[in-house]
Amino acid sequence: MNSIHLRQTLPGVFADRTHITSDVWHKEIVFSKEKTYLVEAASGTGKSSLCSYIYGYRKDYQGIICFDEMNITSLSVTEWVDIRRHSLSILFQDLRLFSELTALENILIKNDLTGYKKKDEIITLFEQLGIEDKLNIRTDKLSFGQQQRVAFIRSLCQPFDFILLDEPISHLDDANGQIMAGLLTAEAGKQGAGIIVTSIGKHINLNYDSVLKL
Image (cartoon, rainbow, N blue to C red; front, side):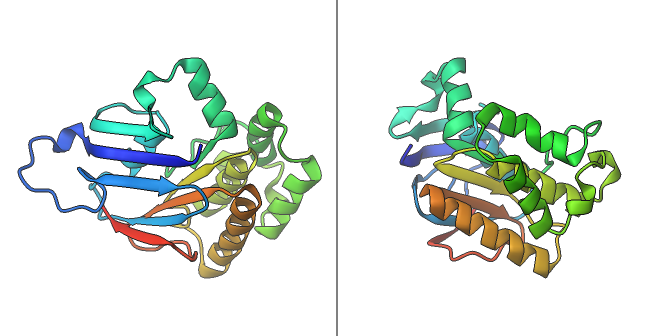
């Protein structure tokens, strides 16, 4: 996948609005591979919806979203499974970890499907993010910031052409945010991938090619 193309895309709940000021909604927007994008938004303007639309998790929008000019509404379940395993990774704002599993078990569920990273590489990521002592702790016993780091590691455990990160450092201090930025830049660079980050204020410090106002 080399591009994600939004054509006059608009959340269904915004359809009756007479005036929308946005760099994304109801516009022609192309996200290109190997580029890094920041989508800045106020709360309630649809940033999580944007990620869910691109990931195919929600379909309550108007307009068209294309992957390499293929309308995503035409994709079969099997094609979506392949895309989410090999082309598109996501870090949801609400993380979507399995609370009854340990931090490492949450990661291995994903990595067992993709076979992308070796176990020692995963443990090294835990060490770099300062949560190596949380490997065998259930995620419902972790702080939200610790859970964010676990979910971030999970998002790196697959090949991807694009990675979506919805407010990835909302509960992290600056030091951990910088570590995450370095790991993300390195992984995306290795894969030649595009990065799309959303933020309502505090955003991960990357070298953005484009900043869009939602």
